Length: 115
Length: 113
Image 1 (cartoon, one colour):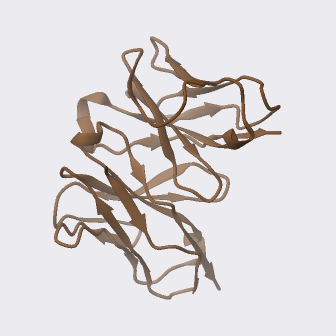
Image 2 (cartoon, each protein chain N blue to C red):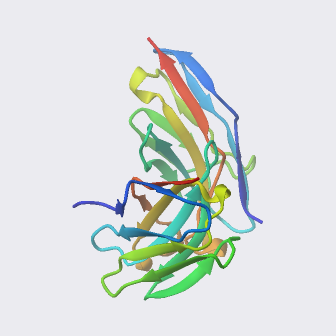
């Protein structure tokens, strides 16, 4: 089992550009969540996808958007990048049918640097 | 809203020392509580969890007990090793939050030989 895989591992973008990050969930998992982890901080919830729809959203602006595909993989898109978007972006997957008390499996993350 | 507060670091211990990292939470419902560990340059790995009051989670010598009366979930290990050096995150989720996790700010642990 490959677990949760994310790509790319590192990315450097210029302020104002757009970026797409990708995530493949653990086998058997159908729910994908995205988190932003700024340096020295805990992860902050961005949004969650299930059945190809955004189900929950954290306190992030509309510049952050996502998509989930029929195979449960997901993308995170960030438009009009700001320097403050520099962070580690983590994808987490979980099986929906285990509701809220299941643990989430996290990927290795994508380190985004905005210059 | 729901939140987690954990002991600030960094923490530096000698090998075989006793470890405690404090974690307290605020939640409107009945959350599940978790400890995740992050090694340098890596993502988060689940260390242990507890889903109801008085449950004890344990793994790799680490333990934490879900204390509803003190809203705490402190992480302990009797004898740390150099390989335990990492950042530790306390987290919760609950029916009120769907499957959204709330994390503490993390506690960096360095174990020296």
